[in-house]
Amino acid sequence: MDKHFLLVALLAAGCQSVPPGAVEAVEPTTMVTPAAAWTETSGSGAPVIEAFWTAFQSPTLDAWVAEGLTASPTLAIAARRVEAAAASLEAAAGADLPKVQASLNSSRSRLNFVGFPIPGSSGVLTTQSSSHALSLGVSWELDLWGRLASAERGAAASLDAQSLDLVAARQSLAAQIAKASFALAEAHAAKAFASEAFDVAQDLLRDAERRLANGTGKSEDTLSAEAAVAAARANRTAAARREGLLAPPLALLMGRSAGRGASLQPAELDALTRELTDTRLGPAPAAGLPADLLARRPDLAALEARVRAAQAGAEVARAALFPAISLTGNVGTSGSELKQLVDGDFQVWSLGANILAPIFNGGQLRAAEDRAVADRDAALFAFAQGALVAFTEVDTALTNESLLTKQLAELGTWRNKLAESEALVARKNSRGSAPAAAVLIARSARINADVARLATHRESLTNRIDLYLALGGGFQAN
Image (cartoon, rainbow, N blue to C red; front, side, top):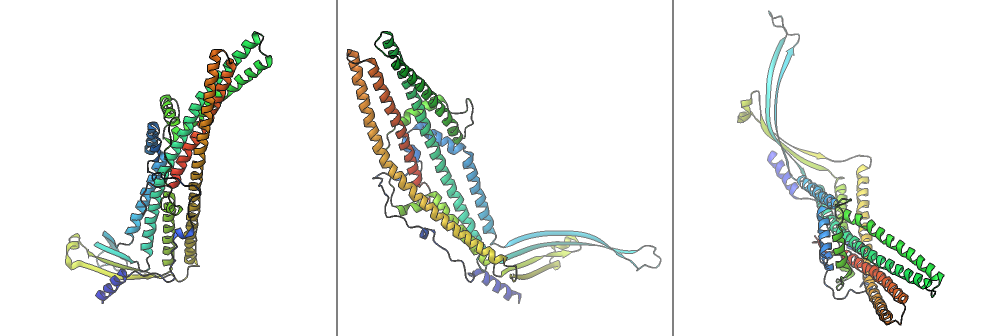
């Protein structure tokens, strides 16, 4: 009878069933309909590389990003979450295996027989006994409805999601460091232009004062020049302040402390500014088709993994509505002396099965299933929302790429014409056919063009980072 019981149980364990009315899975990609093409094309550029920041050919930027990826506490937190998810998967995988436990018990007791005196004895009759037991127990829950298997799939999907979150966090941190570096380089160069503009304003004031002194100038011209000097001085201070405000957040992204000697060094900043203000962007990366984006973005892949985890959670909740069957077994020895624990004549064993079926629980299990299905549906809509945002980010970055390239070229033409005009006026001034004020005015106009072009160049670099980040890549999809 026992053999037949074990045979049936083992066969049942090998034939996992699906609970009636199982939760139907929904493919996340069916929640969105990508467009046929992007608004703007990206040309014939190469695919996005994982280390996208190296495309700017700035050794200083490369070093700063590497430092941030190594020292950032934010990434360390994300990495520990991956480890925690891996431990949860290991625990879920172990739940489907038999549990084996060993125990050793030893006790000694005394029993008093009150009311049974022995003739000639004045005391109470007592007896003492010893008991020792050594046993090995096995328990195994038969996963008839796939509850344990679904829990393991959910843990595996959660591990995938956390791993992809780490990839996305690395990409985001690298992008933040790059953008902050671009802004700081712009501010550092703008501070130099502000100092040059201040020098020009002072030269104009001296020229106005000289002309006023020799009777060829006007007092209003001198007052206007003094106002220009005051404005240039304020602009120079503002430029220095902007640079000072941008440096600490960048150092924080890199994992550096604030304060003298620990933050960014002047030599680093000078090198970064030279490298980034002179850089020429290569062709934009190939964007591919909108539908391809769903498999390229680590954040979208993480959202898809969370849909799988939520689906598994719904399946676990559904399986909880049905009976759970467990097998138990115990073998060991028991005796009054320790030496009897290794004697086969004192062997004991037991074998049993347990069926636990929910009958009435106030609707808690059904409510838990409804909640799990709602969580799965919320995960599906989160994926859909994430996909729509991703499509918008790529399309916006591609459009900006085209317009910024055009704007930068136009600003370059404007700046070059002003530089030619400045050189022409300077030559005329050297021959005495143009006043010094005309040279200074032309120089001031050229400086303004340099500042405008510098700002647009930074926008162009930042948009290229946005495009790299929007296109994703740098990970292996499961």
